[in-house]
Image 1 (cartoon, rainbow, N blue to C red):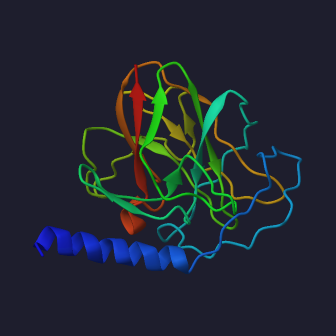
Image 2: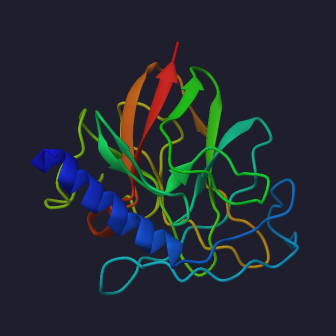
Length: 208
C-alpha cells in the first residue's frame, strides 16, 4: 500500500471514530423553523468542539427558505476521501430513513438555485465559510475571509461568503441566510472553528 493511501486510510479511520462517539439530531419530517419544537427530542451531540479560547457569538437564526436546497451541517455526516480534495467532513445534502445525516458529499446544485445551511446538531455550533483557491490550504494562516464569524454575503461564488456561527439545535433548527448561486463553478468552504481540528470542509459545485 502506498504512503498516500495508508495516510488516507488512517485519517478516515480517525474521523470515523470521532463520528461513532458523537450523538446526533433527529428532526421529524420537514425542518421546523424558529418557534417550532422538534419531536422526538434528539440525543445531545458530544462531538468535538472548536479551537480553545473564547468563542464568537452565534448569529441569529434565519427562517427556512422553502425554495432552497438544504446543506446539513453535522459532526455525524461521516467523512469521505475524495481523490481530488482529500478528506471531506461535516456537510451533507440529505438524511436517511432513520433521520441520520448521510455521509459527507460534494454538494452539486444548478446555477440560479438557492442554498441554505442548517445546523443539525445539539450542543455544537457550526459554520460554512468560503475558502479561496482550488485546493484546501493548511489551517494556518487562517484561510477564511475576514469577519467570517458573522454572516457575509448572500451569493456562493468566487467572492467571500460565510454563514457566520449558526446556533445549535435547541427547541428548533437554526438556518443560515439563504444564498443564491449565480455563477457556475467549484467553490471550497469549511467550518472556521474546526477546519484545522477535524478537517471540517466540503465543496459546492454550481453547474450551468
